[in-house]
Length: 390
Image 1 (cartoon, rainbow, N blue to C red):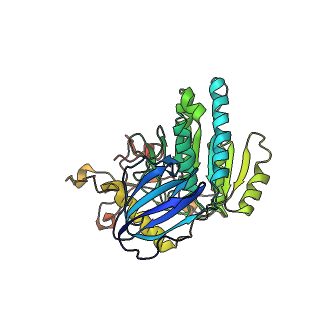
Image 2: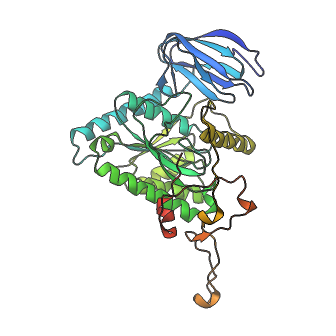
């Protein structure tokens, strides 16, 4: 049954949800939406809603309120669409969580030799990968675990600004509105929204991130037992498929969850069958997932960048500082001049070094461009230490 539609007028209304059903909502483009749980129990992205507490969701926000046992929801504000659905894949999702929870307990029982689940979520664009990742993380945190969230989707960015790969520990269920806490993220700046711009750099940063996490796990039994959840991009063909295999191998993933595509599931199952410790599972994508146009994705990316600087509720206040150009050094990774043919073997073509660090002139070409602040002390350290600070 539909409770709203395009251009719904602002009004306070109640929706009663039956058990194992969900209310799917897209907030209007120009005004926020307030929502609260009147009775029963319900959750958003795996995080339980507090009773009788109003939550304010910003314009354009898309989410679903799910209940296991029934609930009554009250909404105040406008929505583009809102409707209830009683066919969801949530039972299969929570069953996966139960298996992962069992593996975490096994790892905790023998901390010296065992490794908790390292889950990588893969699938085509708009299959619900980031949503499933948030659910698995929030359910694990609710059980007292501290899993590490790894986000390799540079196109949208669930942890920090788009154009980065990042990782952060999840110690509490993820806030339905604010999202991932940015208190302790480990961030590597890639600088593009697709790996095709510099595949070698993307792979190098993924490897750097994995090595850092491996060292952290070595000295932290709790994090090692809790494991990790890895969100990936939606590019799954050609080079994109090769990058998925690279991520699975680099992070030593032992659980591969494939959302929404039989072909990808079959390909991964066949190529990974030689690894007995890797389980490949196929899961149904949620019916609430909709395809987004490139224009919409670009607009969503702009919102994410704005949220990074101003906060989702405009509660941050970025400010400007003045510095002399002579005090700043700006570098670009990749490209640069090609080696002369005289220095190459006969018949070989000159190729630009994809990991070359080259200085960039400070001019008008840098207007309205997001740059990263690196912790590197020398230019040749930039690839291994490129991070951004909030």
